[in-house]
Image 1: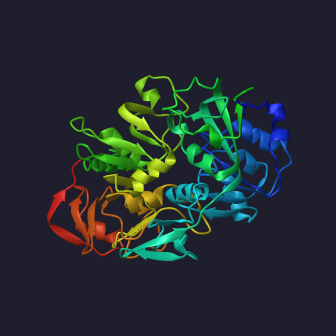
Image 2 (image 1 turned 60 degrees about the vertical axis):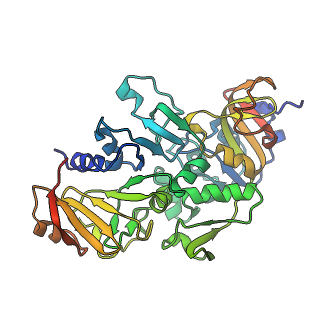
Image 3 (image 1 turned 90 degrees about the horizontal axis):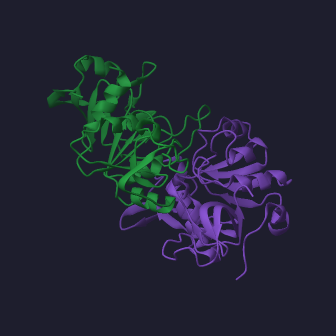
Amino acid sequence: MLSKLVNKEDLPNKIKLWDGMTILVAGFLGNGTPERLIDFLLESEVKNLKIIVNDTSYPGKGVARLIEAHRVKNLVTTHIGTNPETQKQFNNQELNIEFSPQGTLLERIRAGGSGLGGILTPVGIGTPVEEGKQKIIVNEKEYILELPLTGDLSILKARKADRFGNLLYYGTSCNFNPVMSLSGKTVIAQVDEIVEVGELDPNLIATPGILVDYIIQTGK
Amino acid sequence: MDIREFIARRVAKEFKDGDVINVGIGIPLMSTRFISPDITVHVHSENGIIRMGESPELLGLPIDPDITDAGGNPKTILPGGSFFDSLLSFALIRGGHLDTTVLGALQVDEEGNLANWIIPGKLVPGIGGAMDLAVGSNRVIVAMEHTAKGNPKILKQCTLPLTARKKVNLIITEMGVFEITSEGMTLTEISSEVTVKDIQECTEANFSVSPNLKIMEV
């Protein structure tokens, strides 16, 4: 079975990056975000990125580092309150932001990766979130039609993997990782520990390896 | 007693044995420290944990950077708890599996409308999980200081962009407790340190006073 493990040095040959591409970044306030893969993006020249991420983390952590380096042009996110630099670039109109409620963002990513044309949610009715969106009444209740999201690349963080790319997560660092494994054309995970195929209990695998194209080991 | 602790202690009395709750940062989170030891309350955090425990520092335990609350602070998990991904976490929230959510507010009004995510042109923290929590939870409690620098936060109608429409059931401040129903807003409890007139003076919203008005106890 082909090993999906790549070295840091191989990354530029394996993962194609281009200006304006869309990247899904897993994590919640940086927890569960693959910092080594953020390094990889920063070491490249890539810019004007569209990033889909729950939040822009704290200064110096996770996606915040891409924003501080002015690599991001468009952001789909739920929250920027923990990052003054994001707010600054947003107020300067250097950065475009589409705010999505968190549950809606998750379901849009799931829809994008699972063949659905959108989702209906009551969240956002009566708020600025509904502006410009189609509303649909089902059983006398009003819902917003929210459209699917996909990306060119998903970058994930997992605790443990086998060489086939089966992933196990740990604690609250799981968060957006499983759903984002569905919705990137290319999916790469940074993993703390890598074992041989067959060593992981198939009952406990959270993300099946068929969804994962590459894995890289933390710190190596 | 500190005003914020007073509010947090009163919030804690709203929780019932077996409740699944979610608490926002600030006073709502503080309320979990004052839950009666006679009841079991399951704390959910939207980043993917149920039965979240205290911070490891308080318990003298080592910090695990992969177990955090929704503010990114280290936490612990209690026996019987579980971790899950964000999709399931928000299915729990929207699907009516949370008994009570406690949130802070920038503004709340007499119809139960809530505004707590943006001040256009000034502050753009964002939505996070607040809209899902306000819409999906079976009961929504706003816990906050009664005014902001002397200006009313409990209004006839919110002027800031809304987080959710007609979803707030209860408001708890240092001055009193208000219930909101389709009939309007009712003062049900009052702090021993203020009068109804004091409350009226720093509340823009119209409210009635319950015939069974009680002194607020914490």
